[in-house]
Structure formats: structure tokens, C-alpha cells
Image 1 (tube, one colour):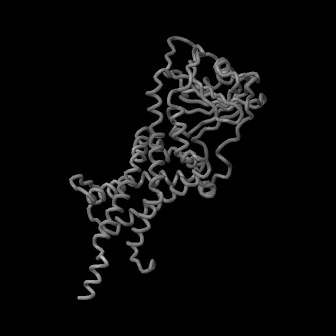
Image 2 (spheres, rainbow, N blue to C red):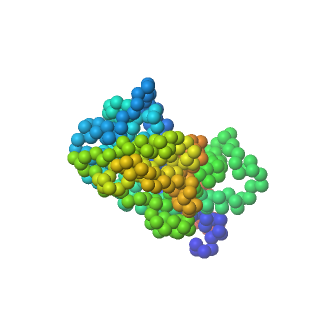
Length: 379
């Protein structure tokens, strides 16, 4: 009976049942998450032409960037500008209808369209696999459930090791590669799992924020966040609509924030609304730490300035969930370590499966055959 099983045996069975049921999905989520974590340096290597030298040239006005992108894709409407410093190409997002669209890269000094950055389609597909297994809402639920299982696997694995009560740190953390067979598999599964435990718990507990509305709401309430962090999108600009005035607002932004390193500007059909330029500087703590400058488009007058550092602590915590999830909260080293931990996720599915098979074989080998049992009974 289940209630008669010792606690450790019950925990062990739950651990391998969970691993067998969710291991394949977690392996896919881990590989795709690791690739996404390495996307930035990979895309930089794949697109060296997106580094632009000024050579004494002055950048064009933002209206000219948009006009160049519109000439390249006349059936698309410009949605947003992305600027990554004076030494990089400008991105203009072009879309049709409600689709996300594509981001054209332009030379900011002469408006020449450089095309679509290589590798973006690949990483878009990887992201769909990571979030939904590329099958929509059903896949999203499968990924969410597997993420819950990952939390259980991490905690139950820790509990199973803890009950062995190793007294030395080396017993917890030293990987003995001289071992062979089942002993080596156990070492790879248990010791490497101990190394990566914190990475997997952080990735899972933050990833659930995107999986379940109830979990997201609970985290937001604990953080004291009562308003949605995602701001409503401005009314989109039509494909044939005149380009709104941008030059005065952009010049005001460059004067007000001369140390900006990144900026995004959403293009809106509402000419009366101030333009909102979200930006970061070298001092920004992570990739989601956006400051916001609101500028009157007609005369460049600054009408609002919201700084990330001045936001309530709860809002800053919720904004940091994705950097925690990706590891970028600790910069490039953190992102690299989290990506490597994610790429190692299949190791635990493979070693766990082989350990389960080895245990089953050992159990079958130890069990007496029916013939032997009858013979022993007759004797």
C-alpha cells in the first residue's frame, strides 16, 4: 500500500515518475532557453555589418529613418524605432495589421536599408518552442505544468540527497569521473544537479510568472503592484498615414540624456499625445530597467520623466523577473551561466532515464523466477 511505503521510498518514486513524465519537455525548454540566453552574442557575430562607423557624418532625423523603411516595405506600417547607440544600426519595426512584423536595420547616417538581421527568424522559432512548444495555448500549458514539475524535481532531489546526510562539502559537490556505469550516472545526475539547483529554481519560479495568471497575480500582489506593467499600445500608424513629427522630440531626448545607450520609440497615430521614449544608460542595472521620457512632439518640450530607480520597490522587483529568469540580472556572466545551466537540462533527463532502466533491470534480476519459487516450495 502507498501509505505503508517509507517516506524516502515514496519520495524517490514521485521523483522518477515526475522526471519520466516531464523530462522530454524540460529538455526541449532547457535547450531552447539556453539558446535564447546566448542569442545576443550569436546575433552580434552573425551580423558584423550592423556596427556602423560615423566617419564624421551626422545622423539623419528619425523621420528619414522611417521614410527609408517605408520605401522598402510600402505595404507595411511603421510601428516603432529602436536605437542602440551611435555606433549601431537603427531598427524600424514594420508590420501589417496586428502582427508583430519585422525589424529592418538601417544605416542611421545615410538611411540605407541593411535588411533583416541574420538569425532573427531562427531565434523567433526557438522562442516559440521555449514558450509554447510551437503549438499555441496547449503547448503553453504543457510548458507551465512541466515548470511546476521542475520545482518538485529540484526540491525532491535535494531532499533525497539530504537524507543521506553527507558530512563533507566534497561529498555534495565533488564529481568523480573515474567511476563507471551506474555509479557515474548517479554522480552526473545528483552532483551536477546540486551544482545547478539554484539556477533551475530561479528559472522555474520566475518562468511561472508568464505561465499562469493566478501565479502572476499573487506575485504582483505580494510586490504591491496593482497596475499592469505592460502599458497599453498607442493607436497604430497606418501604412499610408503621414509620419508624425519626431525630430524635435528626438533632439530633446539626446540633449536631456546624453549618456543614453539604448532607446525605443513607439510610433502612434495620435498626433496630440506626447511621444514616449524609453531609454537606458550604462548605469541601468539590467535590460528591463527602462527610464521613460515624455516629450511634446511639436516643440520638443519635456512633459514627463520617469526614472526606473525612483519606482516603488515592488515594481522594480517585478520588472526584474525576466532578467532573473535569463540570468542577465548579473550581467553577461550571469546570462552565460544561466544559459549553460539550461543547456545541461537534457543531461538530467538522459541520466535519470538510464538510472531508472538500470534499477528495473536490477530488480528483475533479483526477483526469483516462478519456477525457482515452485521448486523451493516443493523442497
